[in-house]
Image 1 (tube, rainbow, N blue to C red):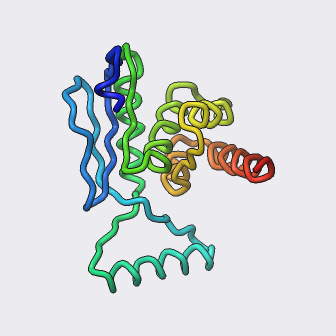
Image 2: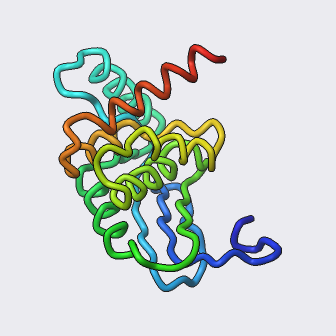
Length: 170
């Protein structure tokens, strides 16, 4: 839809995220990052409920013949490196995933956090939500990026705060 728009957008870079049963976006651009992982929860260490939810989904997937892969710290690191490499590129950076609601918004949030620096976490989340109404950036991917960027929980905290405000206004 965005790639075939009128007038055509100046797409300079693409982050395409797809699970094992999904397809990445097909487009020729100068800068591209393809990642393969599913929209599944990354359990939080020492959080029994989070660990149980992830284990339950894994069991369900196995019983149904599915293999799902959660994002890893390596995926977040790849997005960070990509954002640093395209920092000065002119044009639109398109972040793509299956539904455009979780993984792609998390990738966009990570890119914005890299480009704007510490202290801008809430503004980055507001910008992602402005660009993609209803977006719920993948919390596990954001946690990995927060740690890798040395944000000491500021990115995760800003995401939680935005989700709480949204929950109160609905």
